[in-house]
Image (cartoon, rainbow, N blue to C red):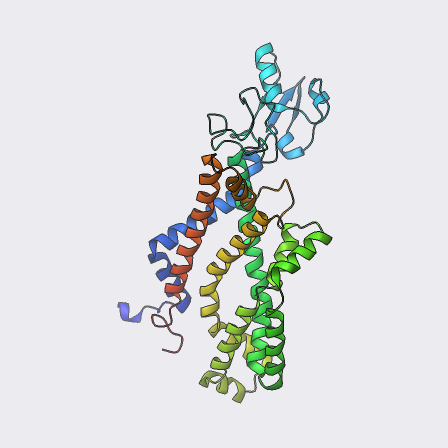
Length: 353
C-alpha cells in the first residue's frame, strides 16, 4: 500500500506532534509533570517521621500512620517522638531497635533550633545537613521550597480551571445568543471588573482564615472576565460559519450547536492562554503571601520565603534559592505556553482548510 492511501493524521495529533517538536516546551512540560507528581509523595522522601520503626518486636510506620507519642518508644519527653534523636540514641546504645528515616529527614514546618549540629541564631547558611540552609525561624528551606512547589502548582491549576469554567460558560452564552443577553452581560462583566481585588482579599482574610481552596475561589472569581470576552468573541465569529448554518438547517438543538460544533472550534486561543494564566495565578499567590494576606502560617509558601529574603538581604540563601525556584518554575511554564501557542497556531493547522 502506498503512503498516499495512509490515513491522514487528525488535527489533534498534528498539533501534539508539533508541540513535541518544540524541545524546550516539551522538556519543560515533562519536567513539571514529573516534579508535580513526585511532590505528592514528598512525605515519603522528606519528613521528620520515620518510614519504619522496629521497637521491642513491633513494627510501626509513622510516616503513613501519623502521630506517635514519644513515650511509645521509651523517650522521656512530652509530645510526638523525636525520630532523629531516637535513631542517634539507639545507635549509641547498640540497641536491637532500629528505624529508617526518609532520604531528607526534615519537615517544612519543623523548628530545628534544638538540633545539635546548628549553632547560633537562625537563619543558618547551607550545610551538609540542610542543603539550602534554614529560615529565620530555624525551618529547613529546601523542605519548604519543595512543599511550596506542590502548593503553588496546585493553586495555579485550580485558579486556571475554575476561572476558565466560569469565563467560558458566560462567554459562550453571550456570544451565542447576542442581543439583550450580550448587552446586559457585558455591563455585568464591566461592573465586576471594576471591583477592587486586593481590598476584597483583605476583607476576606480579616473575616475568615485563608486556605488554598478559599484563595483559589477568590482569585477565580476575579480572573474569569478576560476569558469570558475571548470566548464571546470566538462564538460571535464561529457562529457565522457555514458549518453552523448547516447544523441549523439539519434541525440540531442549540445545545448541540454550542457544544458539539462551535465550542471545539473556539478553544484554540483559550488553550494558548492557559499556561500564561498559570503564571499569573502563581505570581498572585506569591504576592499575597508576601503581603501577608495569603496562606496562614506555617504553610510552606514561596511568597513568605521571598519576604524573608527581603528582610534578610545579607543572608544570600534566603534571596537566591526562593527567587531561583520561582524563576525556574515560571520560566518552564512560559516555555510550555510558547510551545502550545505554536502548536495551535491557525496559520499552521486550520480546521477550515
